[in-house]
Amino acid sequence: MQGRNMSAYENLYWWSRDGLRLHARDYAPRDPAKAAGRPPILCLAGLTRNARDYEGVAQRLSAEWRVLAIDLRGRGESGYAKDPMSYVPLVYVQDIEALLAEIGCTRYVALGTSLGGIVTMLLAGAAHEQLAGALLNDVGPEIDPAGLARIRGYVGRSNTWPTWMHAARAIAEANADVYPDYAIGEWLAMAKRLYRVNAAGRIVLDYDMKIAEPFRVPGNEAGPDMWRALERLKGVPVTVVRGETSDILPAATAARMVAELPGAELVTVPRCGHAPTLEEPDAVAAIDRLLARIAA
Image 1 (cartoon, rainbow, N blue to C red):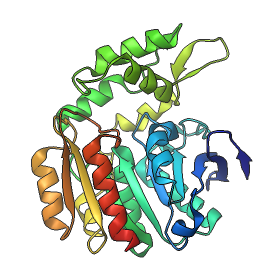
Image 2 (spheres, rainbow, N blue to C red):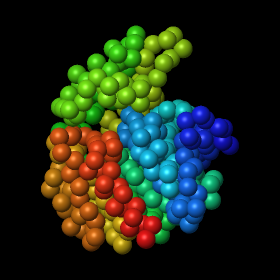
Image 3 (tube, helix red, strand yellow):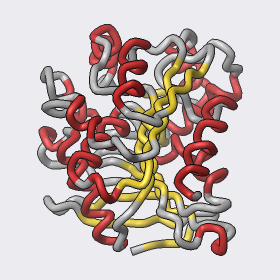
Image 4 (cartoon, rainbow, N blue to C red):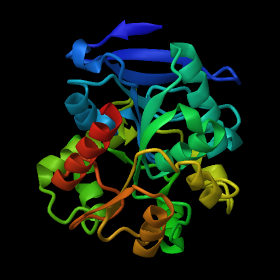
């Protein structure tokens, strides 16, 4: 099931209910004594992203926690679905449930960015008692229509580049307002998380272009009643992270989220749009506070 990787994680594979081979990076705790008794941390990325998005987060947290950075179906090293209409949150939930069963996990922490946060809320609705804590990164039960329109405008559109620098500059042009303080080094790092090298030596996006098909159908980007799903997080340590200029999570929605979840914390990452990488100082401190509550 696992194969050793030289970058401090093992590749973990499991099978979905519909026979798809799925993948996660499994970061073992470097201090097993401190990690003993602690639930693993599941890292769930956004719509077009993959497990590499959480590389920095996972490397840091795996000092004292087991961390699983997951490639949702159709992303990274997970298989591409035969039926593109399976690229919806409720199926992603079933895939995660299959992973939990595979590793015998009955309690976990979830860090979910954008789509990953929607999956986290739905997981809480399916089995509240298994969730030890959650971080919802720049997403909530209501999504700003302007942000949805922006995402629908680019998802599923294939671009190829001859070099990593070309890819990085294209990402910089498209996201300069999201990360206004980034230099070329940060854009190159983002390119290597978003893209891969294909058999022809071109730099291409690392996801199945068909993930766009269900996303373009109104309502498929989330679940039937996400406020009801959010309610299932009551009694669980929760942190809501929002980018200051996010066009996905409105400030009013974030405020309502923490108002409806007693004890939840809202953290706004300055000079950042959708979505924070969770490596910003404010986000790092917020994650540490959340995990301290869970480990106590």
